[in-house]
Length: 121
Image (cartoon, rainbow, N blue to C red; front, side, top):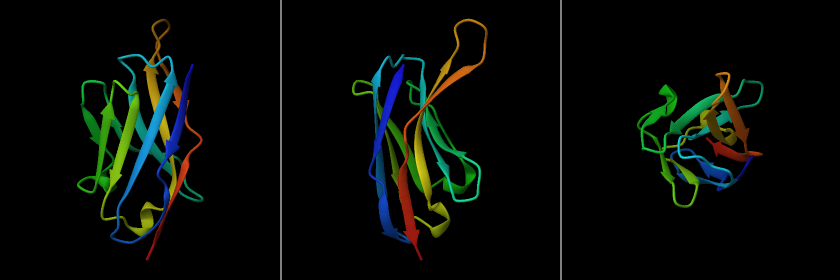
């Protein structure tokens, strides 16, 4: 099991910045992919950014060039630096750990409870 605790959300004006943190505890494996998803009111949860233990990253198109994901493997912590925030970035942001199943294929997902980000116009 993996427990995830997010922090760093809040209210910010458009154009501002926030930094989210997520600390993982429990059994975090070296091959786990850590990432951030978000869910805006009335919308489905969507991937924002993800990072492997080796540092490979991928970003959703709407946040490319504005957000940066990073990871401290020694601390089992993942960060999301969000710059040039827009009102459309308003959402609950969830930390995620994605693990490939050793037997049977597929993936296991672990989720934090989420941290709210509100960007005012």
